[in-house]
Length: 339
Image 1: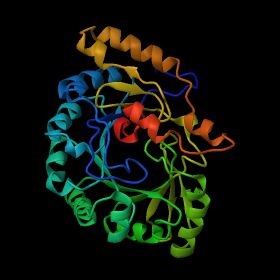
Image 2: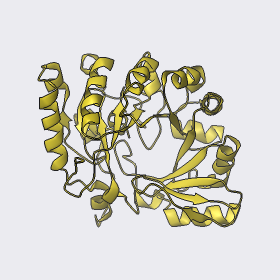
Image 3: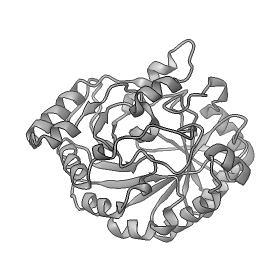
């Protein structure tokens, strides 16, 4: 029998943060220059990550996504990819990256067993990229997109759409995705982690995005998709498809099967979860796989989180956490728990 939570949601998708470090400073994730970092001695070794993945796999997790921070800042990441890809239960092994370092290692990652890549790219304009990401790296990100496709890896391009910032680039981002034979995915600006300057008036809702795309590109038709997937899929007249993740105005909590493991072994069963479960301590204490299975099973069975829906119901919605709270608890940051 599958392991189900209180709303009959299975434990299927696991996001593995391999580092909390990042080489960009995106305004919706980690806009500050100075951060508190996880102690290096607390970061899980590859063998420890692999051990935990096997425990999750025994409970039904068959889709893995490597995240960060920026996962390519973790030394020798292809070694971890090879370790994880050898497991028969791993149906999908993907990675989310900002793309800055991908041109140097896309082929190596593909050879190691990586199956898909998602690149975060919010603008195609150099001045906006500098303003949004805090670094002048647009050319390297575009090179990473090209290298990913050249390596034969399916590619998705994630763009967080912010009113007055990049909401006039929907058609341009669709054109880039079409050129790369990639899938564009537009994400509503979310009030999580480092988005401490978030406000609802900056959110471009799903319906408005669709109207703008239809005006620029022609009729938009809904497509069938995986009900567990965060993105709703749509097709354009030329056959190109794209997705919209409306996690702010139309949350998908009811089908959410995702959980997140930080680089230091804290497990969060919801993006809005304030309290994680420490897996590093029992793992390093050598409690054995049976005890870890019991801990994960009992935690998931008790899971009732519907965080994005709860946030939607708030009458005066502002940023999820303040800068002061983030400085008290580094794991509230999205770059620590994998976004």
